[in-house]
Length: 315
Image (cartoon, rainbow, N blue to C red; front, side, top):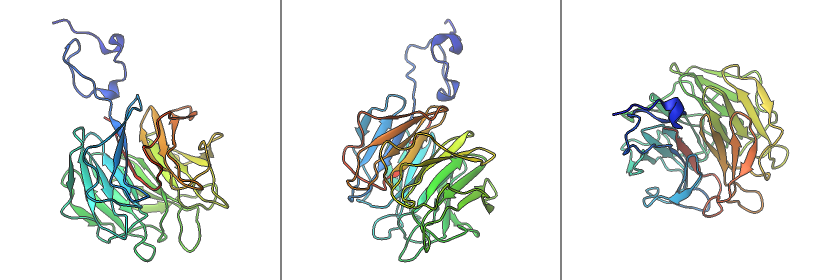
């Protein structure tokens, strides 16, 4: 059988192909997908956007219950997770990649809460951070991959808060940005992998902000759509990895809104979906990597919603 060199076969994005025999007519490449799950108004729906086409489908099996103010994280190539939400629930749903079959973890969050954020260290662990359980939370729950066993970090967030923007640089660090404590703050907490030691960046968000969303281009940069600062804003801050230096994109969201949650296909593009101001939006904005140029998908969310759980399979 003839062996075709990948660089000359048109299949030159090596990161997208884990194992194949070039020239095999039965080979079907898998590009991964991003997911937006649950959200407000209360929903169990999980919408899937195929990479790189951005074609949207809806999973036949959604969340185990309709859930608002839910968070997401993922172990790319293995499973995506949604955690917490609603009237303070501890449920963690797990969606296997690429089948999208759903199970519910026997051990959920250590404290039932909503308006939390998720970060991940691929192949190692995922984290659900902060939130609100009747009062602000600093709790960070860690779920080891692939066992899904849960521990709670001794050092949680530096300030108990909710409505934060998460970013992840796998194998290096995860970040929780901004949020609402007794007021909106600009603080960015950084959790080093794998030690989980916490520091706070010298340079935080460009404004005190809450109701943000976050996404990352792994090993390159993380992005936070601020949400509400002095007013509802379209601002997107960018933190370069690993220096953590901050810039602000010249072109932010297509429309100012908050609780627009983010996911990404590293090396290709990041997405912010849904959100609210007045009205609630179906909009999905796409930021191309590395240029950060923004387009808006022709097909957004199937219905207008905010604070969905966002996660991605970047396989």
